[in-house]
Amino acid sequence: MIYSDIALDAVVVAVLVDLFVLRTAMLTRGIYWLTYGLIVPFQLITNWWLTSRNIVQYSPSEIIGRRLAGAPIEDLLFGFSMILLTLSLWDFFTQRAAAGKSESSS
Image (cartoon, rainbow, N blue to C red; front, side, top):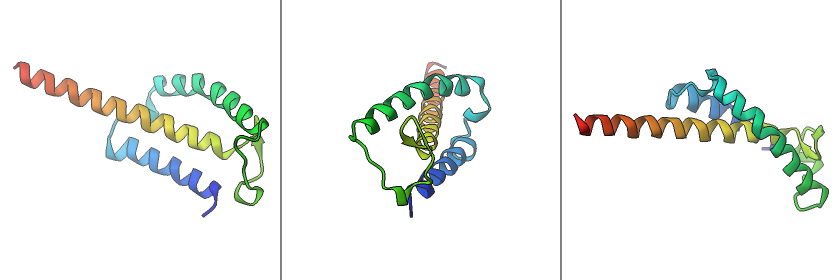
């Protein structure tokens, strides 16, 4: 399995977890897209910095080949997945904790 396959799988898993496992539907909320839009420029800067200094290197045979800010396009897929899963889990556990507090105070 190459890096591209893993990145695509990460997106599929993140979307399925968000919509069907945790049922937070983060993808349908404007706050997710706002947050993602705020984080992507910093991800690109970090990718550029790490790859331009050869701190992180990618095997050309393991990536699609297209790069953005020095890093493979697949890195954006991983970033998307990480942000989606983090916000989905945060929302899920925040709602669960709030429900537990309201039940215990009744």
